Image (cartoon, rainbow, N blue to C red; front, side, top):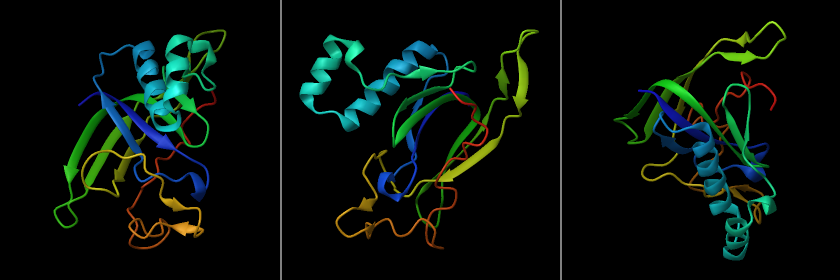
Length: 176
């Protein structure tokens, strides 16, 4: 299936979230509409009601606006931040042993603008992640700042019991 896939990314344990997956949208939505949704998802998680009302009244007040690159990939936020891109061969399966969802997809090739026209700079890639949670998507923080370690229900993402590929490889992403 084709879709817009929205995922969280972060740098360092202190910004780690319970779920890499933030949303899946109809592929026919325009990049500008998806950018609005990505901004809403980001600020729904990190802004209070007064800030949300201010941003609704005057979008220029947003500290992080969604940015769209040459390939219509979208980024919004700081750390953590949201990424949205169109993907194909999206499959969501349930692991029969753990009951957790396994999500796999292919990304499209990445192009860069050149004087003579767009040129492919990176092939599309196959991705796979196993969600740490069963049930609805979550933006819950995994890191317990007071204790300086991962919350008990999430374990250590570097250990054997952690979900494999719980982070999405961003090496194919070009700079925005």
